[in-house]
Image 1 (tube, rainbow, N blue to C red):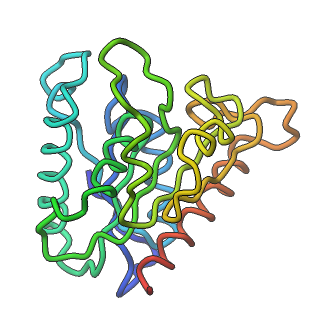
Image 2: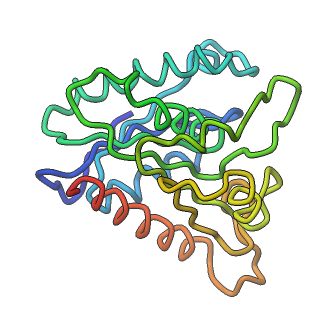
Amino acid sequence: MFYPAEPAVADGPLFVFAHGAGAGQASPFMQRYATLLAGRGIAVVTFDFPYLAAGRTLPDRPAMLERAFLAAMTAAVQACPAARVLVVGGKSLGGRMATHLAAAPERWPGPLALVGAVAFGYPLRPAGPRGGDRVSHLQHLAVPTLIVQGTRDSFGGPDDVRAAVGAASALEILPVATGDHSLTVLKSAGTSQAEVDRGVITHVAEWMHRRATV
């Protein structure tokens, strides 16, 4: 699905945005965040991984997910010829796959430079036996990467991510106070979910725009 940048930015980034393991591009989180980013001058393209498009619930192996992500990047660039640079990202599983590509940008042969990656709710701790290694590639990121992590994330909070990764120069972590794995905050946080979402998106959009001008 394509979310055009409003307002349009002549040299703004194109964001290819992947979904989490259990809900596709039509999920409320994906639609809400894609719409908010588009409103900050980011052109956004979402897609469904093949397993979900085929009606399956178990995600494919990482290698297949990465190939699907690269194919979505190619299609997005072809559909958005005015874009100048590319950022990849996603929620949970989608964000994890984006960081795989950020650690090996040479796998992207496309015409636009891959200048950043964003993960919303990084799944640090595997949910099952097929979870695999979630950390080692983060120590070898080759493009700037932003992880937006709730402090109540059951897969690991911001401090857990930083402790696991160490001082990776290409990695920035944005904590979301009382946020869970979907960045949903507690009512006791003293601010509305809409305000939190706007704050997150403002930070992320500004971060992306900086990547586009470096």
